Image (cartoon, rainbow, N blue to C red; front, side):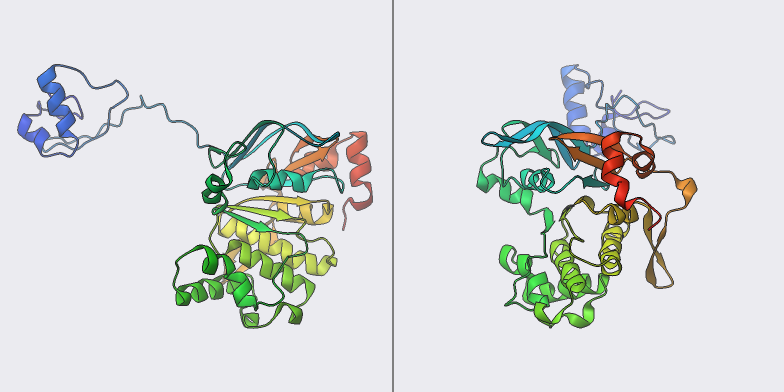
Length: 331
């Protein structure tokens, strides 16, 4: 009897021959060997009325988008990171908080392979990156979008040329398709009417949102935000926060947001984007939904805290109380 699948009657060689995996089956019939225990696909044979799915597979959990394992990094005698470990599951968001100069941006540069750790390992999308050569890092970086501090737009290029820059320079996508993608992402962030303007014609918040559009234009699986709202007033900062929320909830992009702006961090993790009435609405997440462990606090070179927004705000830890004191809600 054929060793794969099941039917009320024994499967004949002709039955086996009518199915794709049968060559292996027939070879094993001739040799008398058995199939590996964990090779038990479900098949429908001509005379079968039941499909059985084996539960003997050992299904490995999906690898996280980013994983740091005991990573240390220093500039000469100045130690920045000490045995830092954390993971970012695919499709999730982590907010990395910490005082200025504590090493938050260094974490992003380590992910990109711009710096190499002194010890420990770093994996991005299941691939170790801390020991890769520069040319081998390029495919990894192709799936990462980066929002730099202060936007870092090219002043001599239009909004459309800035947003499409990576597509023009790093892909063979035809110009008309690049333009279509640029229109798509600018419409997503609500700046479609500014497509042919120069960066100097935009407000600070608009420039920051154009930078987000540039980061998302190649459809990366991972987005890194380096202080996305620094230097913006609260109202303008909220428009940037909304775009980050929309990317997480509607585009399902994995993201790491580095910031020391507590108000913006709290807003991002307590709001959600929903499609409604032909548009998108950003609204508070219902209280009964529960918190996710979205926050990481970097202090003294280590991950000092990891947990939800409520756990962070309710913490009695002296450092966390001091760090949060001036910006506790209500805002």
